[in-house]
Image: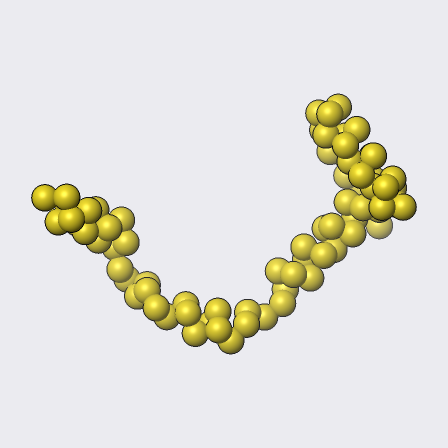
Length: 76
């Protein structure tokens, strides 16, 4: 198991210790669980509805220019 040191402001560290104690765990175990949950969440495949929605905006669309043009026409 690896170990890291994370500098935190005292206020955040106090909060983390108090919150994890309320949850019945240590600050270290709480952070380890959060990191594990994040990894599992990011490794999940996308939902079919999300995959379907990814094709709504063409990847080659110049979105900022298009939006700027829309605003210019709207407020002209």
